[in-house]
Image 1 (cartoon, one colour):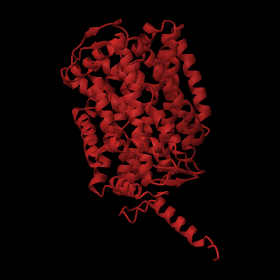
Image 2 (cartoon, rainbow, N blue to C red):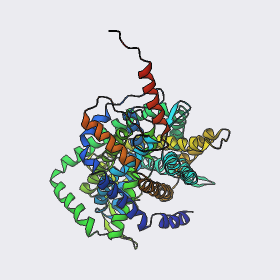
Image 3 (tube, helix red, strand yellow):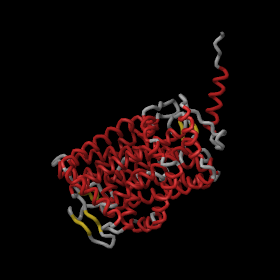
Image 4 (cartoon, helix red, strand yellow):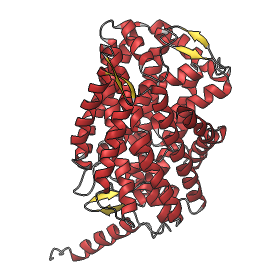
Length: 506
């Protein structure tokens, strides 16, 4: 099975997808006049200004939900894999895809807001919704929805739970080996899988509001604690920092693992981590309550910075400063060996060894705990994304108990991923990410050619901001944006309320 999945990945993650993702990021950066730089302060302001409602969550909650999907295994095991297979220069390409991808994140998340709708008391939206409404191609929207359900419901969860299982096993030992029909299973991973699935089931059966409340507390806490630990290690080795940055920049263009390996692994793991262009971020963005679609687009653009430029960089610096990594030769063998050859690069082991070398007795359990929170909240985000796409299909085709079945399948995938090998889990995850990225990036490029609604929204928002308005409004009809029923109806409701408001007699 692993051979089959790797063969499929060789087609999905061909150089064409790498250039498509980088090219789209550069294209949208130029079109928005590098919105990720120009409106950085506005992003910070919007981050704390939004309010939730009965139907929608706040901007910060939406950021937390999307960050729970972005800040996950990719920030610990994914960075290690990028270095292990692409060399230190892969870190530079992760930065590049994050910077350019921030503009892509703005585009896709603003589209998610523009074309969202209310479904059974909560907001729903995402690529399937805006592909159908803006592009008018329902068949393409269905393909994306089905691919996303398969990816976030079955393929990607195993990556997160596998990392949890490996981290716990590294921290406390594998335990006894049980022989089963599925192969040999370590008792530590068996117990870990059971615990993770039990907690996951309790939360996902509580709905999106419970998911939002959990992530808005856990995500900021875990990210801050992890970055603080990284800062301690970096501070203890601050004299090595200039040399590390020099090595990253030098290896980015004359990489030890080859140009293709460095760029390919940097972009692959960068997209896996920050999700820019992948099409997952717009689902959480659409669920937020905002005055103008561009506001949540800007908040989501900022989340890419948090994920890659902060958390991923912290991981990379810890690994490189302590030398706790190997670099695999694309043709076989190792180009650099600093740790045991049998330590899998597709695991959190590099990061655990890095922290353990500086904080003996603390490093391995700390990374195991951090990874549990990182990966667990990502599982919550995956469920929400899969549920949203099931809700999209349910608008046309209703199947009794479809959400119940989805929950059981996701929980089964989580348990299976916990006890299986890392290479197969990552290969399946890469396949899911690649499929969504192809479908979504092509979709948003086509939507630009058909009228660029996200660019129109940005210009409208900036015009109101320049005029100094105290309350933003969004009129899709005035901007020539069609099929944005939610915002059109919202505008009509506001206008009707103003007309019915009694005037004060003179």
